[in-house]
Image (tube, rainbow, N blue to C red):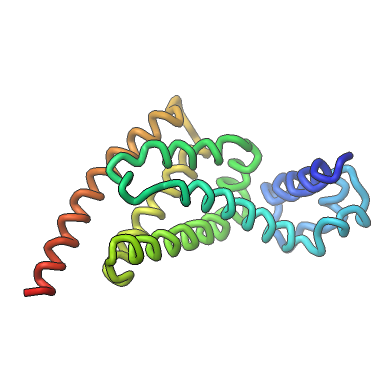
Length: 194
């Protein structure tokens, strides 16, 4: 196996095992056996079971942040493209979708993603829109959590809803709430300056 293929096989083996067992019950021996490599090979790539989890989280966040960096806050009125790109990233790896929705680690993993994306978005809004972070923190956290939960729900059971339809639904909701949010910020700014 090539180096990238071996690392991928180890991560996939971990995700498969996490669908059935809590992380504290998953062993390196089981991951190696599932990936069809020996334990020595496992240690060439990871130093522990938790290291596999941390690497998956880092890679997921790196990919999501990369998508997010291409998004301009000015595009918030029509967020379809960025919502679609996030959906494609989740859809590209069906095993990851199962891991994200059905593993014993799903809640912790998605919480970390929500937290990081929210923090990034709050910082961008503060910098680009000159709005104090405390004035947008809760709204951003609610929006990011809702969108992430919708994707997770979609990954669990699509019931005939395409990615395009999901993004249309989320996009229209987000666009409408963005307009209301901008109006409220303007009113708050007026009150603060009067």
